[in-house]
Structure formats: structure tokens, C-alpha cells
Amino acid sequence: MSFSSFTLNANLLKAIDNMGFEQPTPIQRLAIPPLLEGRDVMATAVTGSGKTAAFLLPILHRLIDKPRGTTRALVLAPTRELAAQIAEHLHDLAVYTSLTGAAVYGGVSMGPQERAFRRGVDVLIATPGRLLDHFQYPYARLGGIEHLVLDEADRMLDMGFLPDIRRILKHVPKKRQTLLFSATLPAPIVELARDMLRHPVSLNIERKSAPAAGITHVAYPVPHELKSNLFLELLRSSASKNVLAFTRTKHRANRLADFLEKHGVTCARIHGNRSQAQRTDALASFKKGRCRVLVATDIAARGIDVEALGLVVNFDVPNLPEDYIHRVGRTGRMDATGDAYTLVSPNEECSLRAIESDIGTRLPRQKVSGFNYAKTPAERFEVPIAERLAVIRARKSEERVRARENVARRALRETQGRPTRYGTAR
Image 1 (cartoon, rainbow, N blue to C red):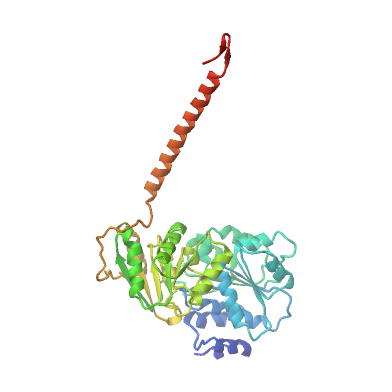
Image 2: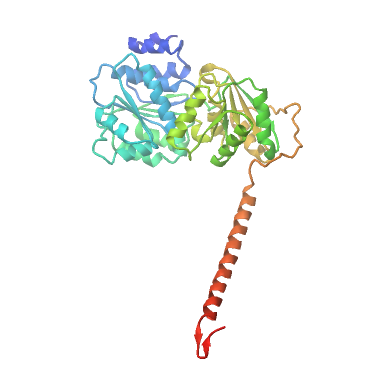
């Protein structure tokens, strides 16, 4: 089966050919025909399955012959990175057409985004929070919306965007085509779909979310304090030019990036405390090969699309099986192959077993030959939180003691300098 069998516009087919897409992926084969017919669709699809093109191609095809100057399609995405990625994909697919698009997300100036609203770009890709910011102003009116897409709906639920989505629905016409794509379908998402979609075509609903078939999974048991050293050893032995590493917290992402740079590994970092400009620069450096390792928190798990990414490393075991699926889904995309390493400390074994139960397979445990698992690291990667809290409490206790002493000394000075009936007090 080829893309030409969908009777898509010739200019879209030309763009597809230039992008190197030879055959549609399973989700594209299933979703494109009913979307071209104008049907609502609710689909589950694993990360890296080609779902972005699955919803963009039919929308662009149906918009090509419409007059310009009215925004007719709105795509909602949970993160800035994913919104930017979809906008980039849109540009590539629409390159031989007059169709326009713009990304609307936080962390950057609202000025260019306002101009996109006023210009009436054909497709807006937006994060919920920033879109609601624009809705406060009269220029942000989306009464011409004919196509509404919720991408990564389960992630929006995890990030608390469900109330925002319901508020956004009040700003778009009820008569529209609605598409909902999600890697998993928790109950609130199913309920939202019932409210939003009209007689939808349901795709892969019974199929359990799982990592792509081309990914090789390996778990590396290691003491918590030796994780950074083992990761460095794995980097030295791996042939992968681009490595994406996930940490549990922003603090640990910074610590890992600092550790790698100290040992001569070029790296960048992406997490919630970085500005949008810093996050964009980090991702660009990684994509262009200027740095070998990108250290990220889960904010980037569904917003990074790097060609031929060979290795994903879970520096910390994720708390939820769904997060594991989306992390490792950055490799093995579009039927390619890739590796997923997970560094697991003894207290993370329980979380790893939950992941293994969910994906239906046990990750093989391996040890790195020649690595000293019993050594004491020269420096600690991270001070345990209990120890950090103890230091903070001790510091605050010392501050309280000093404060009481200062009060006592001031009181004594005031007493000594106070006049008495017989002269100044001594």
C-alpha cells in the first residue's frame, strides 16, 4: 500500500516523497481514510508510530481548496516541545502548498503569536495554558475551526489540563471534526471522548500500549551512588552518536549534565526550569550533533523527534509504566531499531517490576565487564534528601540560637545604658 492510494493532493504526495516516506504506517493506513471522509476518530497509537502525519495529512488535504485568512484547524498538545515538533512537521508536509501554520506556547513572546491569530493561519498548534492566555483578548477568536485535534490526550490528563481543555471547547464551534490521539485510554479520557466526539471511528482501542517492536531493552542493576559512573562507562562502550537520558527530577538532570561535562562528554539539558530559548537551543544542538547526550526530565518524553536516535537511557526508573513507554519510544521510531538501557538501583526494583508486568516482558539484567560495582565513588552524585533536610534543620536551629543571643545582647546593652536614680546603670 502506498500514500497515493489515499488520493491525497499531489502537492502533499510530493512532500511525502521528499521526506522519504515510502509506505504508510499502520496507524496512517487506519486513520487517514475515515479522516478524509470527515469522520471523528479516537485512536490509540504507540509513540513513534507516525500519528502526526496520520492527522495532519487529511486535514491539510481538506484545507487546500479553502480560502486563506481563516484558522480552520486547531491542534492541542501538552508540551512546548511537542507543539514545536508538530509545527515543524506541518511545515514539511505543506511546503508545496500555500497552507500556513503557527505554534502557540508559553515561555516566548506573545507578539508573533498574536499576529498569527490576526493573520488567520490555517492551522494553530497550541498548548492549553498559552491558548487560554490569548483567549482573554478579542483578536483570539476561533469561530472558523472545522478540525480539532487532541494529541497525547493522556499526557494532558497527567499534567492537569483536562479543565483547560473543557474551557477551550467553549471557544470553538460544536460543529467540527474532532480527532483524539492517545497512547493510553484512562477513564477520564474515554469520558472526554464521549463528550467531544460524534459517532467516532475507534482505532486500536483494545490494543494495549507497548514499546515499539524494534527496541532492545536491557536493565543494569547498580548501587544508587554508582549510577553516574556506570552511565559514563556505558557511553564509552556505546557506538551511539546521540544518547537521550532521562532523570527523575530537574535537580538530578542538572547534576548529571554537570557530571558528564566534567568528564569530557558534550551534553545539553531540558527541564521545566529552563527557559524556552534554552530548551530550544538544547534540542537544536542535540539534533545537529553538536552534543552527544541530551539530559531531560519527562517533560521532553513526548516532544523529541530525532532521526536515527540509537540509545535512550533511563538514568532513573520512571514511576509509571506509561512513562517508560514514552521515554523509550524516542528510539525505534517508524519501524527502526534502537536500544533502551535502564539503570536500576535496589530501591527501584519494585518500580521496574511494575513496568515489566505492564509491558508483558522481563528486561534482561546485565553487568558491565570490568566495572567495579563495590567501589566508593570519589564524590557523591546527590546528597540524600533526608541528609539535606537534616542540614537545613541544623542551620535553622543555629540561626534561631544566634537570633536569641542577639536579642539577649541587645537587651543587656539597653539595660546597661539606661539612666537610674543614682546615674547610668552599669
